[in-house]
Length: 339
Length: 180
Image 1 (tube, chains in turn cyan, orange):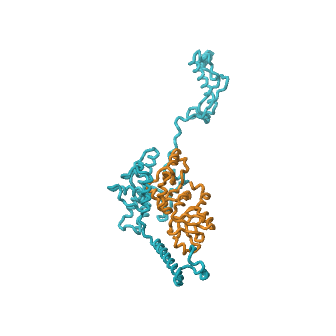
Image 2 (cartoon, chains in turn red, orange):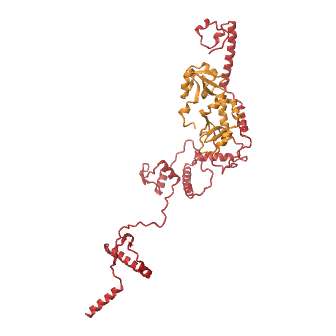
Image 3 (cartoon, each protein chain N blue to C red):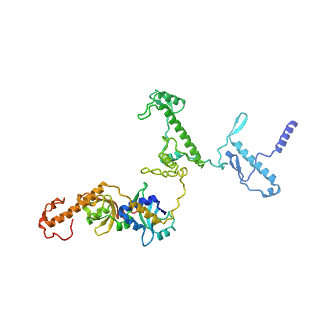
């Protein structure tokens, strides 16, 4: 019996060392086991706190932790490699994230355009059947390159091309040109998204540059003479490129000073220059004028003729003969001529 | 409101010269006040100096019109006269056409003038010259381009077009919102 008493005494001693597992609270704690959170809604004991704040907090924390652990033990447990495991339910409390939400990746120029226009990307199949080679060819990769090589063993020389030109080399150059253009555009997109100003460069290959680029090239090339393009003739309907003043020799982006002369004087000069333009010989106009004078002369001759009484000249006019003309002798001579 | 560039002034005057010839000088140098041409949103306004000064107090975005709108520069750089310019074109016109009262309505609905509707035409009118169209009671109705010279008109058949329509006072109603 002594042994039993001793063991019991030991265990009670042992248990006295620890605080009890059960904790009494006025109000139930609120648990969120998913995040291992327990919220104590009970009143704060100011008396105990003022006596010994550290001890009070320690006890409170222990009690609440005990309750939380009790709750955890209520969950179904399983044993994995001699460790007791509990599967936590999904968390109820929404926690704010530590870092800001990542920004969506900025769209490239093409993506932006496609979005505006509603252009959707079509998915291309990874393998496609090649009728010529009678086998499946991948979209890209070394097998594709091999297939291309196999397929394009001979190339047609275009009708108006130089016969000595190497068509294979031309194709290769076009390809590398396209690749480098894509790379340039990629870099340009990066620069644009990071707000870096990219210096302008001239035009690249004329075969891949746009009309706008070519127009800019013309404007710059024309200004690139010793006299800054002052004596360069203008083409019919030629339009100068805009926004290239930074790289055009002699051009300034500054607004030109308004001339000191009064405005109406300047306008007068322009009007004079327009009005004093030498008229170019317009055949139609000249013929019309000649016709007019001829008819005038004819008319006057006719008038003279009628006063003399000759009938021959009268019939020469291209006027419709009127039936009653012969009888109306009364009005001859005076009065306005009516048409 | 900005001054017209030299290039644009030239285009404007070339257009005006088609209608009023050397009388443009009278528009520029007037005895009553200083008048000038100003440009805003590609539209050309003919304004007297005192009114222009008053207009500077208004923000250009809020300014709808100042003085008389003469027309506008198209996107391709040409100048198009508006019917509002008729007040200045009519008294100075070089070549005039008077149309019969029966053809008036046809013209005011935007149709060309045919020989049948032609009442009177001023002498020495050239082909494709700008003409101002009047009613028989000397009321300016609009303007256009002579399709035939005066001599050609005499021998034309009655259905032939004499004057191509460009603008008429019916536009004040037809295209009210486009005028400004």
